[in-house]
Amino acid sequence: MSLGITEITLILVVILLLFGGKRIPELARALGKASYEYKKAKELIKKETNEIKEALEDAQEKPEEYKPTDV
Image 1 (spheres, rainbow, N blue to C red):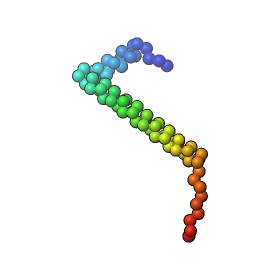
Image 2: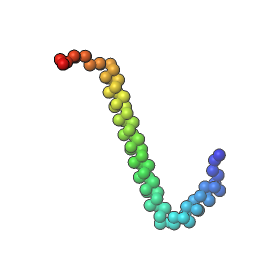
Image 3: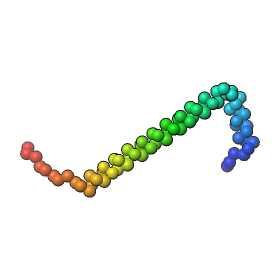
Image 4: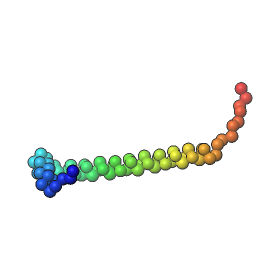
């Protein structure tokens, strides 16, 4: 199911009627900022996940020697 030119035009007209010409650029800016923040957070989560994964792999490759303690 895809949108045709008629449906897209109708959606744009409804948006213009609901929000007005002055409000649309503000909404577009806010949407752009939100998209940027989402991408930035997604990349940060990927980076942290990879760091944790690498740390776990390093820990498995180099297990610490067992050192019994006196009780």
